Image (spheres, one colour):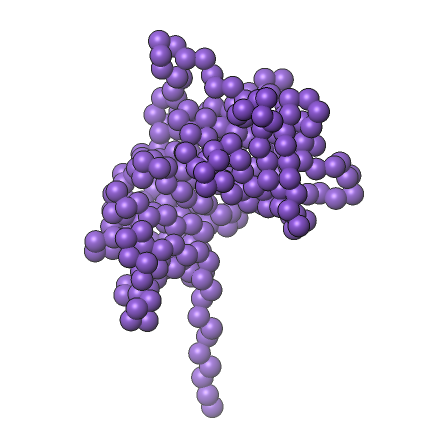
Length: 276
């Protein structure tokens, strides 16, 4: 007797064009990306290349590209001139690591607008756009649990990574070497009956050593090292004036727990402020 139109797919991610704030890239639950013009209230084009919902979008105003990531563990590069797809690549899954179905993949450009941070529950990876060459990969130890989120510091010199066990790692962005691990006890009181861990990290826009954690219990904590420490951990020793590097495509795994610098309240020092 009648036909009911299905509801439109949900929007799962948004990103504003860096040079025209009337243009918005909208990632959709049906795996498409809509390029929407606010001024004329019109979808100018629809990008199709993923098989699962869109979980991340990032523009580079230097390369004039949009990079998308999806729950299919795929990265795609789109030209912002004509919106053609320039490259696509699936994440290199670590040996023996089977990701959860439909796990999110997030993307963020370095300040140089060329190097791309890809965040997945199994890994942190650095790609060079627009060809999506994988330069480095960091694989957490299994005891940490999956990666829940990661972000560049405001100066792109560090990467803050949160894990399902409640800990936070600070990586040197250029090498993906783990400088220190912040234990959960540094910012939370132990409570065996509650399983609380960070879901999202936000870096301070001007303080490179300060970041905020959004927790599963609704709390928000802002962390920074003590003034006597000055920064998170210590950089690896340099050799002939140059820091260590990882060969292209190589993987960096976490070192044993004894090699970490354990930041905990009352020992090496972590300042934590709870909001709300």
